[in-house]
Image (tube, rainbow, N blue to C red):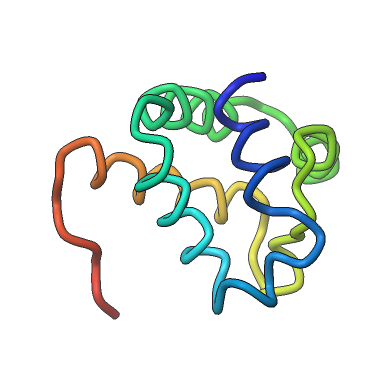
Length: 101
């Protein structure tokens, strides 16, 4: 199981929204809980962002990785959400504080 599948299958489970207020909170928990997987996750997500996959194809990738989350429910594209995951992962690798909106 790669890091993206671990994030999807183990953290974005069916009832994740009962345990976390936002998808970003799930990702933050993963980053804290799985430090050995952060660089791999960043690499995998960067590869998906750089790919020429369509939104529909990215839907398939996210589904196949076990995510019970659709970025479209939050008004995002898959690629846009993956960019958030990549930014959070990169900040974690560099040990930068989270961005505040």
